[in-house]
Image (tube, rainbow, N blue to C red):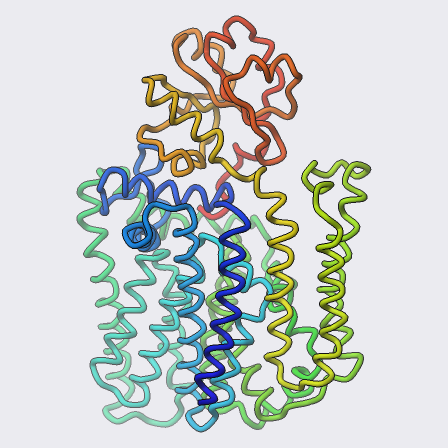
Length: 545
């Protein structure tokens, strides 16, 4: 009964934050809109084998997330919120898989298994990232599946457990490529250390099974990769087998970010737990209670953290599939040696949320003076004040309740308030749908639409476009217009005057600039309208590719 109530409470929090997040904002450029565009291209053309973006084969990511998005559309219809629901459902799966993993690590400690999903979802970064259309929380699902299989194989042997480990590898490769081995392989290789003692049949049999599982996982991924390589052509084949694996790894050692970059990042994405004093008071007890389970978590976290620190191409979300290892240890420490927080502990852990609320309350008054985007001034300060009042109320809650699950409720409720009061106001400046609908209308009339510079596909799904945009070199806009006088161009501007806005087909605020759709004939007649064009950050490399 206690386990059921615990699961229902967690499900309620997840459902609340997910529902508000899906309501408050659209798909955000450039990553979310790009991945939705790839899935839309596969859906629109009935091609489940080779992903495409704006008419070209997209080799940056394998297809598992795109397949799941299409499955969501098959169930709910082609709606904007379905792609992000896939990530939210993957996050929910992570929570329950993490509880199952804790039960395997500490079979006699049901409290740790109940607590650890709360600790994971209580990380403010995880809770907010759980409604974004990205790969890493889905990748965490495959990692947790694989680790459950590995623990089962260590305890009981059997082909079923090894098959689950192989399934985790195979699905992980289909999710984000061979990088899944950074999370799953070191744990298997370090089994003599965390498992301890001799094994029946010797460790050679263990390593043989590890090798067979890796091969089986690779074979599962190759069931997609080989046909896709044949259909996609030579360039696509080279990219998925080399350019996005070994070639990309070699290029990443270009020292784009220093080796220590993750050291300050890690505590930040674990907030609020690094500021929770009861946790620090309980952690020393792990020295006498580390054991097999503690070594397993260390073998999971440390090699992956070191690898990602050594590779210079770093992103914050690469650490997401590693965080559960730390939170498993935190849950064990808190349940074995619960400690009271005290006023200082409560003040420390609540301070970041209070500061966040103050910024949201004061920001609208400072927007014009600081040159911030116009939408900031439209935010009601009452939302930020609401966050501050919630934090003050939660100080009393934490004094009355020693259970750390009550602390998890706070970041979720703060997230709900910020989505409803701040993100919702900013959403129109991120929404590509109005101008994308105009592009779709022009294409339906047979008008060719061009986009200068790098195009991330953010208008493909938003407008349900059936044709790609023509990508042209930046600076060639006028030449293209003269060669295609019946065409149209999509340009970004830092600012347009009233005369230019009246001359454009359509103008909307978009990502701190103005996106304008122009008839080519208009630009031929008034080339001065090109003077305010601003590529901005759109021509920079993709953040996750």
